[in-house]
Image 1 (tube, helix red, strand yellow):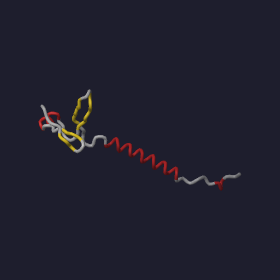
Image 2 (cartoon, rainbow, N blue to C red):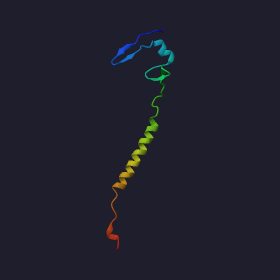
Image 3 (cartoon, rainbow, N blue to C red):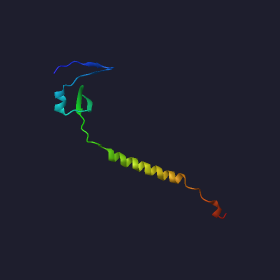
Image 4 (cartoon, one colour):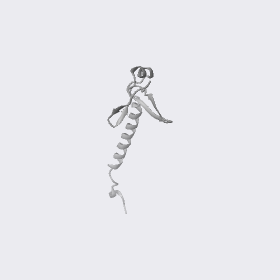
Length: 85
């Protein structure tokens, strides 16, 4: 299929027919790669809330480490009155 390039701001674009999009199951996002001088467009399929739990675990671990560091930073200094010199 022969189609024309269109000016989009400082870039250029191509309109992809709806039948092509439906056939490739392309919805909102695509992965664009340059391979051997050719532009390859692939659909991106993501499950709902993908990666949310792994991010939450890392945030929780970071928050816990921060709380522990703050506890040590705010700990009282040794009381010298008990020491005999």
